[in-house]
Image 1 (cartoon, rainbow, N blue to C red):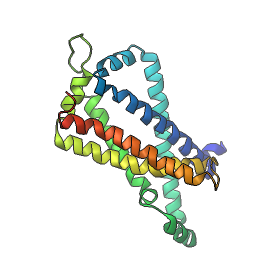
Image 2: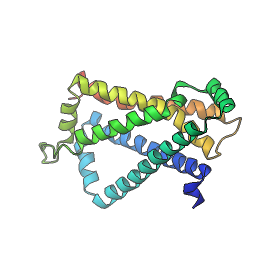
Image 3: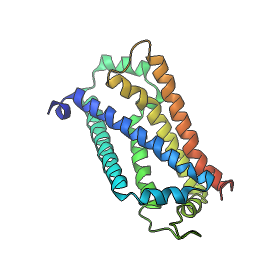
Image 4: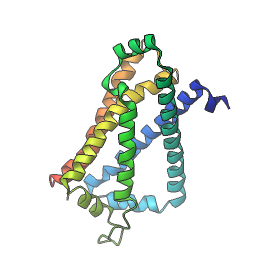
Length: 214
């Protein structure tokens, strides 16, 4: 299929899978915000009462992540192999830190995702709270009571900020959902969305470390 073999098709797949992953990042943050209201255990219990829905969603996200990482690596290698000098000069003039380091911020996010899964998903069943529910809240508070762990999280969320600040607007360009008039708005929106996600995600480990969430 041309979708998988052509450069345009690969870029479209990477853009679409990236947008699916952005949607997940937003939904995951909204769920994590229940830590502030003390409802995290209730939220986790509701999710685990819907195993078919949860596992279907996980498989879709795994497929999106696989496509995004695979074609991101392929396209990066193809671009480096081509090395068109004149084009490279033009791109460098317009490039930003985020656009020049997408492969590195993406790699940092992938490494962090593995670490995050090991810490909170594969580490075993948490204890029980007063209502005999899995104490996910207690596990999160305990996990973020360590300064080195919090620093790893904030550094990883910083990588996510840079990756999304370029990736969001780039995906609109790739899919042709842009115009000369719309691009300034898209670029500003990408930065704002990335900043909101950075602030939201980094606030949780920082507030727990500072004792504001217990």
